Image (cartoon, rainbow, N blue to C red; front, side):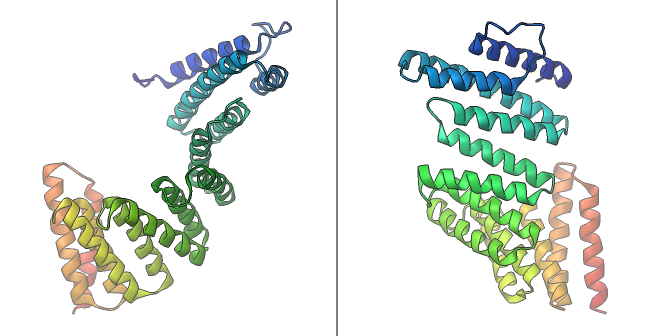
Length: 297
């Protein structure tokens, strides 16, 4: 896998999975030559768990073995993601979730993490209903095991908000962003970069809603946070200045837009000299500056 021979890695992981499941099942009717059916083997394991539920030592061994199965499945899922085969990756993560829930001792944190990964994959595919369902499951598990004020819970709120924003459910997205933002500020402090990222999401949503004055206030807050965290010449600062410039163009404030775009272009050029970056990014910034300058007459 590390050498990027993805097909070779996938073949090895799948062979390992078959061996793990065959050993775990120890079915008399199972032969190496028959076609491997993961779900059929897992159903056999579940029956075995029901039959041996009072045998603590056996249950501990099965829990350990299923943990290894879940780890191997995760490796298969990662390879399929690297191959951009998201549909098959989703199927694999669905197997992981089934395995996690079947274990005699359920690791709820692992269940939540797997559901979160499934949500991310659905979101990448543009399947908003699937993403909402998976993120919702992750959120419910976290609420049950962590409560509603942890950083991990806030991150899932943010993911749910992203899906609602993309789906056009803007009021729901705003409510979730605000809840996530309040928790992150409480857990991380007012100026943490993760707080800035969620504040930036709020600003983007305010831009879409046409609440321009509130949006400008939110972007300026993001700018202050990022300048304090990274200094005045960081690319994140440049990106925020570009957002502020776009907003000023929308608000028909060409002078303020030019000021913001000029500073954004300066930062991007400086960073490009230090670490060659995306030239197209600088070109877009220059185009925005030229457009705003033209509106000044």
